[in-house]
Length: 291
Image 1 (cartoon, rainbow, N blue to C red):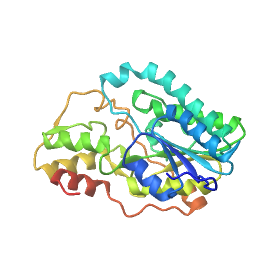
Image 2: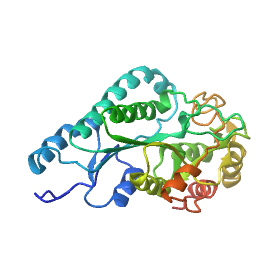
Image 3: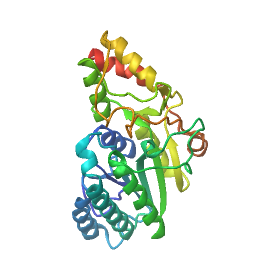
């Protein structure tokens, strides 16, 4: 990013390197500052204060991107330490960008925080549970609350499974299927909320104009866990065998529960609509090796 005395920053994008961060940066434009780690904000603050005055982010937004950790024993063991560390780091992020003058914090959380839908659409007020896989999303939502307490505006987006190229969840599920293993072993009738990386990035950009609040973001064609497994089996041409991994199996935080989301409010307020993206078709292409 070029730095000049008259340059303004439309947003500060904070999150690990990945396809979602890249697409969000493209949507937000070339004036967006990108920060890979929360700790890098100290350097950014020094740079901005030196070049743009006392409150260099006045009237702009900060975007905090989180994505679920992959299940596994290591994730569970590190849950408590991650929870404390990330909660403190993200609270520091909220404080720093607010001190720099940002008046809006957009947090990319996860719909995997929700407990089972029990047959009713999940809304922002529905019960959530933090686990090892979703601790980053939980900490980020706490940071959004902190930002609001500091006088800023916060928008929380609970994203469904963000599928696409270089997505760790997609990679793990399809890689296992190629080897004959079925990772998703929950109730076949359980609903899976998902959206493409491109649609997620567009929703994050649209959130700049959304009223403060918490919103569910997914496409309008939810699929079941059973249909995901059926497509993977058809694409591989192999009978998939359950893999004895409790992190991915019936009790999985990511896929054990049914999650059908209420998403109309965000569309009504912002005009954002998902494209005709297709999770099942994308999984087939990944199995066949197509882009």
